[in-house]
Image (cartoon, rainbow, N blue to C red; front, side, top):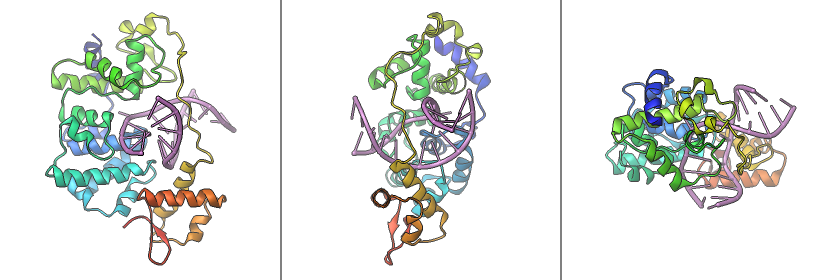
Length: 287
DNA sequence: TATTCGTGGCG
DNA sequence: TCGCCAAGAAT
């Protein structure tokens, strides 16, 4: 079985990430998972350390002003995640007695927590058996199990079933294997240049056995960035984050020449709760 | 189901 | 240089 190869490999080779250290609470794991959504480990590490020092339990974060939360989030990207984490903290404090729930359904009911994050918290925060399916795991399964060069479009139910079939019955063992599958995809079975020479599952890999055929299926379209609303929103948020207080509209006008796009983006930030207008007409992070 | 939502490093 | 990529979720 794949699991029997990955288990010892992970125990020996796992990176020493701060949220994996003994004593990390489920809350710490939840925070790390929010930050790691679409964001590389190296960029998350310092922000997570600072975050956990300031807000060691959910009610601490829930009590913080939005502006502080958004500034602490810094340049991790997708700042709506910070809003959702803030809201999730409030829900945990009010509805779960300030304790992160271990139940997957209860987790998935929290803002910003989807199928992946709910199972990741159950597995890594509580040591439970929960099939954790992220982009790394999908790639590892596509190669090792299905002999395909890459994963292709998500097949949510089938992906969950694939991973479920790989996990040992025991909770603690399954949690380690789940972490190991992700680790393998992150450091060995990578998207671009897989390091098959370092793979513990080399001899069991269906893709290697098939001669590493090139992936021919549908590719997910690459997202552009330059000139998009995402770029403009990012520039506006950077001004609001950096400023010590409310800023004049003039300061925001300076970040983008296209007034129509600029206004649309500013409006969307207001709608998203990432910015607000003060009584005197200036703009700021939410109080 | 297809888009949208930031940011920055790397080959 | 620039396309690709990085522990997804919401709509």
